[in-house]
Length: 261
Image 1 (spheres, rainbow, N blue to C red):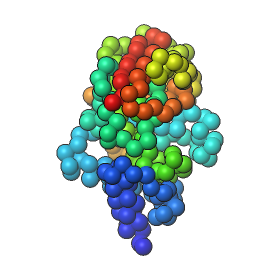
Image 2 (image 1 turned 45 degrees about the horizontal axis):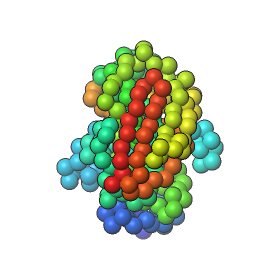
Image 3 (image 1 turned 90 degrees about the vertical axis):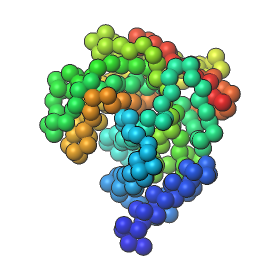
């Protein structure tokens, strides 16, 4: 199998797994996908296939923002994936699990981009001017890989394990919130199952978002006004099932809830 073929075959295997809601073995091993660059090539094939089908990109998500997880996977920086508009839910809306395979939930900060961030040498000041609002967000991550036994390559190839996201309704201004000190309490069916803080996300969720903005600008695919960015998890992810209620509260940012159905 030549290089181009292996990317196409890996992408097709992931598309078919998603469509059938059946997990598959690691594409890194099955198709010989090695390294982040090759994994992103696989992901881009499926992103383009989705765009051709009419799905609209709404932003980006950041993954692997926990230092512990980075050490576990042997990486020194986060990864990223694409968000689509049809992944979006708002506080109180039902979360339909029918299209998911093995979902888990994380509590995060959502950044609403207010200015184009296309400078290839994006500065901290330019980046800060580009943040319009903050929102509390539940990210529903979902993997097509058997039992979530992923490597860095497998999660990147699978669009950073993107699933759905649920946004709060009351935006905050950047200057009104201390992001590193944010405290998170995430409850399932009324019981706390995940706690965390902003410092767990690369020391500060804003640092994670800045990394993404610089990365995308340097690749010629910059963040634009109206894009949404999910920061990465403030605490451990957890599994949930149909009929479970999810209730996230981030001190200073607010609350967001959903019911799985």
